[in-house]
Length: 530
Ligand code: G4P
Image (cartoon, rainbow, N blue to C red; front, side, top):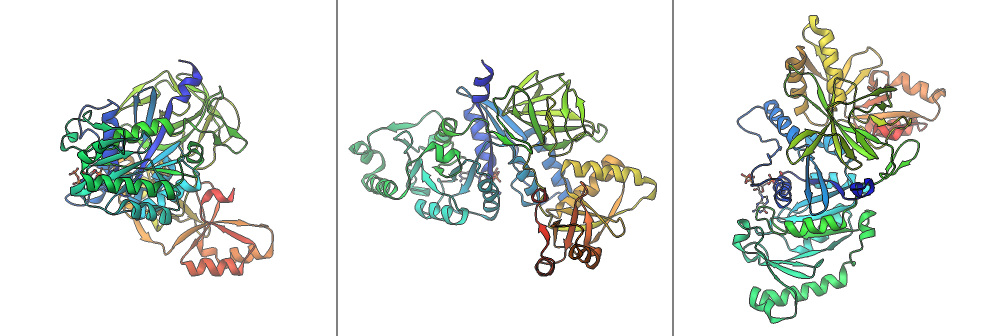
């Protein structure tokens, strides 16, 4: 197959959802339809379950699972599908945000009874800001849920999307009879058996024939005809270009658990979802069809076995082909690196591969060269944009609890930060180190991993910050900036890349600072300041 065809057939996407909406179930069913797995239950759920085990053990369990589910790849029809795992738990939100820099589109799963939930809002906002094409899948139609029009209204209002249904449910819950596929203009009837036999679907093609009445009953048939008329009137026609630009989001309905509506979703997806998209670097827009390889690290996974300190860096290939044993430039370090055993992912397995194409993810064994956001090229000096650090929500001093192991502690902190587990801030005034995290759970993980992987011990102490604001003065030499630095010295720190950060203790303090020192601009993600 030609190089261009290989790229064109790739579909790299993520499934995003509030926990429990059915992300794992849907992912698994997509793999099942793709023939990549033979039975349900093969994809492990990576959500954090509270209960018998302590939190950090839960996270270790989750980390173990996410090695296996980071990338799930399979071939379906003539397409190569790469599903990137996105943890739904809010403590891992940053992980998910970073993964979203490597997808070309997403599927948003919404629970028909719960509608739009908190995490859905946050994740969709990130996708919307980046114009990532989104398909919405409303799940659990076998249960009593909300009215379809109500839900689509809520999606438009809370998520600020412009939706149009490509499939539409006939009844719901106990009365759920099936789905009208507006895309292919046919009907797929729900049978209790569909859980057992995924091929067995009943299809009719003429909506106005009384065959429909016979199949779903007169009442449901009449209602469907009426509702389709309303859809025709109030929702825009589907237009692929609008979807690909992020201006229109098609909606599908189904029940992942019952394999229902999943094939419609997958078939619709491969037809409309974009092949690898161009990506902005600090010097230019890079097109996937360019012959020269380029890519960036969006995730780093430490080995679960503490005796083997190597890590797996996940690289999204933006352009060209990645070849085994070929030297590539690590732009930040300015040195060439060769990879003798790059991993490709297939279903839940990884295997060594010679060639990968734009759109694919390769896993590179790393002994500490990479950090998240690093760019690899064939020699061109450029850096891909779009992997910002967001302000953490929790801040604690980290103290060394074993003076004999300070080197180990330093190395451990350094590497865990490169992995993106948390962010490190060093106070300007006294050099004390502060760890900032999105969720409180990460502190336990860090403590546990420092001890088990690096032999270092730490304790924490609260640091009363509310938000990290990256500081960008209009003029670093003006009096206002000097005064700001003097007054706020106790709260000024440097992040790992040396950028100045103001650790504000309240929203009020941020507002006061902004009005008192208008030329000292505060930014809430690290990237905005470049
Ligand atoms: P997540 O990854 O988004 O967190 O959700 P997950 O797939 O784990 O699904 C959450 C729960 O919802 C699971 O039940 C799952 O079986 C159920 N579920 C998923 N899709 C459907 C559906 O179409 N219909 C119905 N009725 N339920 C669905 P659980 O009891 O929490 O877990 P399990 O014991 O079944 O695994």
